[in-house]
Structure formats: structure tokens, C-alpha cells
Image (tube, rainbow, N blue to C red; front, top):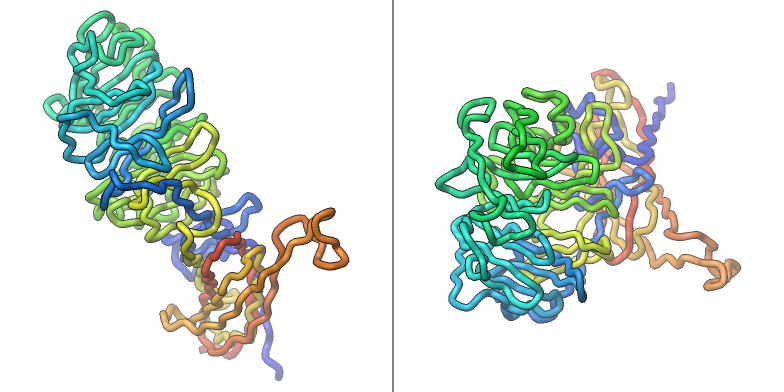
Amino acid sequence: MAQELKSINLVAPAFKGINTEDSPLAQDPSFAEIADNAVIDKRGRIAARKGHSVLTTDKTALGSGTIRAIKEFDRSVGSNVILSAGNNKIFTGTTTLTDATPGGYTITADNWKIVNFNDKAYLFQASHAPLVYDGTSVVRLDSVAGAAGVVQGNEVLSAFGRLWVTGVSSNPSVIYWSDLLIGHDYSGGTSGSIDISKVWPDGYDEIVALAAHNGLLIIFGKHSIVTYSGAEAPATMALADTVAGVGCVNRDTVQYTGTDVLFLAHTGLKSFGRTVQEKSLPISSLSGNITKDIISALQSENTFFRSVYSPEESFYLLTFVGQNITYCFDVRGTLENGSYRVTRWLSTGFSSYAREENGDLLIGTSNGISQYTGYKDNGATYRFKYYSPSLTFGDASRIKILKKLKPTLVGANNAAVFIKWAYDFKSNYATSEFTVGDQITGFYGVSEYTTVEFTGGALTNQRSLNATGYGTSIVVGLEADIKGSQLSLQEINVMALIGKLL
């Protein structure tokens, strides 16, 4: 009797992103075991991320260092200026990094927090005298005329018409605020401070980060969260709420999305709004499908955390700089378990981010400042990877003899594509390779549709590849070298003969 031929059509594979939490045999095939250098595109397909184009042509001042902080200084008059930090220096500019470090000022680390406030940019980091940039020069904040009570904090927030500073090593539960619209005065006018050491819901804690949302001053501790209302008049602001059991691991993981505040806790990526609703020990996490991966990365990170939210790209990027790993969370919506869809970027060398006023995403690297654009990394190719969960065709007890793999790609001009498959959780993948040619897209009035294919954008490329081997479960993968063209994976049709019971 002829063997039964079955097909699994992986339509929009990895639509739900990576899942390393559930059993690979029980997973929805819409998840991915691996999705590297990938994003979820606007049509819900796994696609290659964009690359970065280096804007800096003169990085002499940076030397062998790396850009660790970037901020666009928003000026009320004249063009905006890009401030950055690296190699224990402060820079202005993008194409040429101009050293703007104050004379005689010694910098020993590049973990700056930079904020805009009242037509100036303020720079704070632990154990360093704060700096201020007025569009002309960077100077010590305590050297400004009228400066008083300036503190050396690690965190600064611009909100409610003031600067809020915390992270002072000798007073880890104290927040200082400046006089109204005066970022250099912390002892006169309506300036002041508050010690929240008696307010922490779980006893002792330390302030890690500050945020402002929906009229609330949000204070993130390591293990808890405290909020105050009425911060427009801080002398009379009142305790609004506390959340025990969840805090923030690092100030640079906090990002505003317009409707919420995202931050990294010890158990994964969290939403402030959802955390307050669930109160103590919230069980849901926006990174619930990769919880163990996040916890492992947290335990191993000893350098920097960096993050950015891009409404244009619809993602939140979280980078563990010391491990050169970036997780890309698609923020268009959550899955059934409340998690964001997530993909992973490896070995990018990205070390800082800033979203410009015009929506461009700037990236700091050892080459200076780049822009997130195009499909090459500073002129070089990079590898896109997708691997499915284990496919059993509904019966894990029967042998499967893989016959054909039929991938459908969108775009991928000039890409070298590798289709891979393996059986029964083995790592020795068989490979079939093909190259997508230089596809020409025809547009009305530009290329005649009688000469080339008449399309409205990227072309679709379909292949049918023979496969070999057998086993009870199958993992299918696709890798591609991105060489300047976008690539989206529309579907993979997996065809196998179903054999006897083991």
C-alpha cells in the first residue's frame, strides 16, 4: 500500500516570534525556535532587520572607543545637535565627532544619562560632576552662574518643569528636584528633596530609575515601584501607589511608548500600566516566551543595558551590550499569553541608541554614529536565520520521510539562501543552497510591463527543493546572507511521507 504523503504549510512562519519556553514538540508552528537578525514586518511575516549605515566619517576623537550614549539636543532656535559619549569624552556632531569635553574635566566611564530641559542638555552619571550643554559648549553644571546644591546622581528625569535627580551613592533612596525651570539650582526657590526609604513596600530598596506618566512621578526601585501624584508642586505631592515584588534592573531599559512605560525587571520585560493593575508579584510578562533567556542574560551582563522605542519601526530594542545580544520586541500587540512577539539580533556591535525628532533611529558603534537603514551593516552582509519548532505532522510516534521543501520568499535580491533540515533534535543539518537572482521590479511609467514583470514592489521567489532522510520529528530552517535587499519569508511548504510506527 502506498505511503501517505502529508504537508505542513508554514504560512507566515514565526508570526508569533521566538518561543524557548514551551516544549518544542507541543509548540504552535507559528512560533520559531530561532529568529536571528529578524523582525516581524507589517504584514506579519518574519523578515530580515534593516542594517546600519555609518554617518561618521571622522572618528579621530573616538579613537578605539565605542559610542555608549547618544542624544539629540532639541534647540528652540537653530538646528538640533547630536550629543554622544565614548572613549571617556563628550562629542558633538555626527559626520565628525568633535570633542566637547570641558577642559580639565576627567571622565572615567561612559554611562551617561542625557536629557533635554529648558533649551539645554544635561548629562549625569555616577561619581561624576554633572555637565550641561547650551548649544555652544559643554561645561560643569556647578560652574554655571547661580548654581547651588548640585548633586552627583546617576539618574536624571526632565518632567513637571524641573530636573529630578537620584542615584546618589550616599543616599540611594533620596530624590532631589531643581527649582522651577532652573536646572542648576537644588537649594533655592522651590527646589527640594524627598527620602522615600520609609515608603518602600518591601522594606529596604534603592532607586534605580525615574519616569513620568499620566501625571505620576514613577520611582523604580530594584524590587518595588512607588508612584507620587501632584509632582507639579513637589512640596505637597502625595504618595499614590506602591507595587511590591517587581522593580527595574537598570535605568536605561525604561522607555515611553506614548501610552505606557516599558522597563526590564528581574523576571523579564514589563509594562508599567499592567504591573500597577496586577499589583504585587504580577505573573504576566511581555517577554514571557523567552523568560529563561532573559534571566540568563541578566545574570551574565556586567557592562551596559541599552534600549530604544521606535514608533516608526514598531519595536522596542533591548541590548545586553556586554554580550552583544539584542532582543527586538514587536509592540503592535500582544499574543494570547500577554507577551510581545520577539526576535533576536546577534553580534551587531550596537552599543547605544537615540530616536531623532524626525523619526530616524541613530545607533552607536565602534565606528561612530550610524543610522538604522538599508540592508547592509556598514557595507557588509549579515546572516538572517529562521528555524521552526519540531514538526511531527500530528503524530510523534510515526517516522517521517521528508520529500520536498518549498519556500516562498519576498524580495531577497541577490541573496544566497540555505534551506536546512534535521531530524529528532539532532544538530547535523542537511543543507540545500540556492541563489536568488537580481530581480528587476517593474513600475508603470518606469519599466514597461511588456519587458519586465509588472509589480508594485518586491518580487516573490518560489523554490521546490528535494530533501532526504527520516525521523519522527523534523526541524526546518532557512538562512540567508542579506546583501542590500529586504527579505521576508512568506511561507514554507513541508512535504513528507508518513511511515510506520516506531
